[in-house]
Image 1: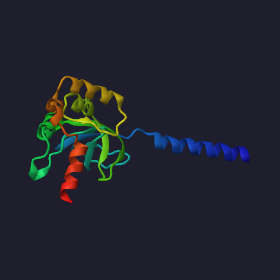
Image 2: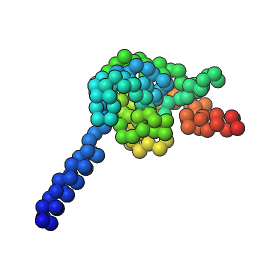
Image 3: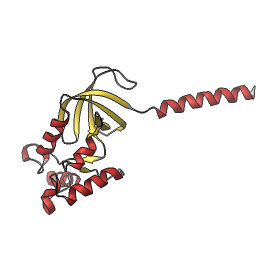
Image 4: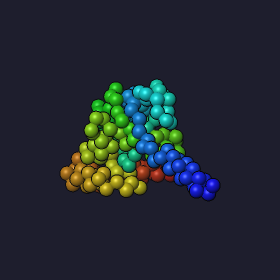
Amino acid sequence: MVKRFSIIFIILFLSASNLWSVEKKFVAEVIRISDGDSIVVRLKSPCILFRSNQKIKVRLDDIDAPELGGKKGGQPFARKSREFLRNLLLGKVVTITYSKRDRYDRVLGHVFRNDLDVNAEMVRMGMAQVYFLSKNNNYRNLEKSAKTHGIGIWSLGSDYTPPQEYRRQQREARR
């Protein structure tokens, strides 16, 4: 009896752990570019967590693009960053892998157009920096190279303000 219970428990445990280890991935069409690190997609086919044709907001994980800033004009390169991402993705079918949602209920994802890692491309071309909390060493190396060559945001030199610092300054100015 105990042996039978143990076998049933092991089977249930393995089944549950397989559910948690399923890679979270979906295919979608990019229907809007919000800024240099946020997009809206329409799911092409149903998956475990989303229904077919559902619109999903995606924040490109591990990167941080200059802020658009609304009426004040935002940061230098914010519009160029969004335009660069628009040229890469708008109307294209992409694959998105993700691990979680952020506090704004956006999917935090890595976006791939065919074999191109779009998040990495944004960093490589100086259209975004690596998010300050990211542990992605590949992206850090791409950022270092972009800085060294003065590409994109890094062409601003000491005039460049990281997006997280810009957001903090904006919050303080509203107080």
